[in-house]
Image 1: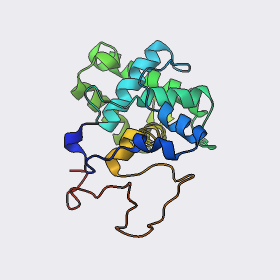
Image 2 (image 1 turned 90 degrees about the vertical axis):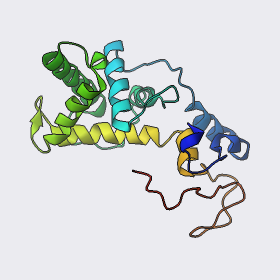
Image 3 (image 1 turned 45 degrees about the vertical axis):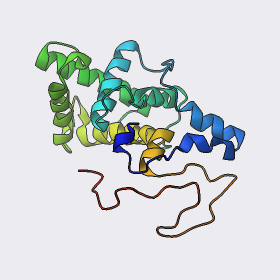
Image 4 (image 1 turned 180 degrees about the horizontal axis):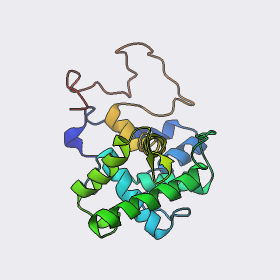
Length: 202
């Protein structure tokens, strides 16, 4: 991520991998590759999902986290949260249906694919889903769709070690563990927040 915006200068979670057991290191470092084979989404679904996730998370530039690819991997391996809304299909089917619906909205409103719309148009199409609240969108409860999208997108985004470096999370504690437990206490490998009084959401 861009060092200019980090609150924890010099903090590099992946550099701690030598303190993790081999299985943990393999899983965490495997999340860092932006070159992934999509196994669940079709090429058209992939294009919609990638833009949707970037717009939801405000990602721009070359250092974007490959959130859609991480979601694709979860769905390909049926790694769900172990539950689903009764008024939505299974997660994989729900993703396919909602991406198709978003594509349909884009074509109806702007005469082109969702991925080819301007960022403003994409944001408006996405916002329209959230604004529906408990009402239905393409036969599905819009609030549940919004929850599906944001739950998967945020889970993938905050599972990435580059984001851990951004938010000051040191990563797995196994097998090294932590010894300085408590508010504003840090282990030697942790870094103090450089801008503790700044609102991170501003």
